[in-house]
Length: 89
Image 1 (cartoon, rainbow, N blue to C red):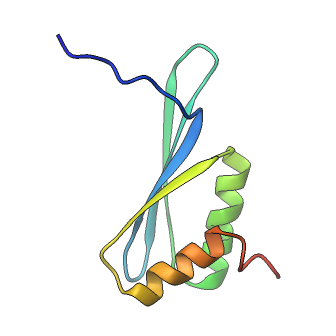
Image 2 (cartoon, rainbow, N blue to C red):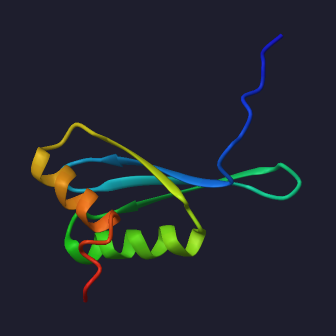
């Protein structure tokens, strides 16, 4: 019999960073323990990454994990925007 993993985060996100896009999945557990997952794809331009940040904030994501096989520059740009360094508009 498979064991079920205990959820410790109510809302989190996973990012898969590519050279021209970022695939994002936000998973949320509601009060009844039901899990809802929503997937969106964003571009990698600054305005797209700011939109990604806005969406994560709206969804209430408290933690983000990022996987990337793209360049260090692309990962750095994405990390910079997520950490708030790119929030000045």
